[in-house]
Amino acid sequence: KKSGRSRGGANGRRNDAASAMCKREAATTAVRASIEASNVAATRALREADVVVATSVGAADARLLAACGIVLDDDEQMKDDGRMIKGDDRRKGSGGAIGDESNKRRSRAPDGLPPLTLPFVIVDEACQSVEPASLIPVTSTDSCRSLVLLGDPCQLPPTVKSDAS
Image (cartoon, rainbow, N blue to C red; front, side, top):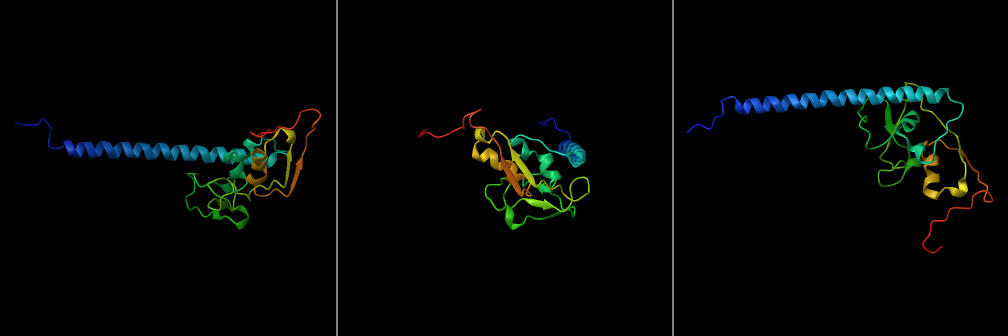
């Protein structure tokens, strides 16, 4: 009894799998190119800005980090393109976070110029900000030299997150 398969059945499945893999690789390449173009455009816009304003959590945006020369461990663009150097000792941490020593530092920003430095960080409404959220803009740029915490406790009372309170 014949199974109904042609002799080329196994080869046909291999060809289909190879074709699907090629399509996935082409789509992945297109997405990576789009991300890189987005990073270049964002870096150019950031270079032209006199002031960069972000929420505490927004300071960890991948485009801002790329402009500052920081590449996260899970970034797909970690190919050895000659623009990355091993992170320095100031960035030690744990858990794959922004301050993790496994993160890499680029010698060039996405636009081909030196990475941005953001030496001043101002946290407005600091009374309302919880400590971990306040640390994100300080650690994410890797170049903060001056930190200013602003807030009026008479306008908005301090935020306290504690079971004991």
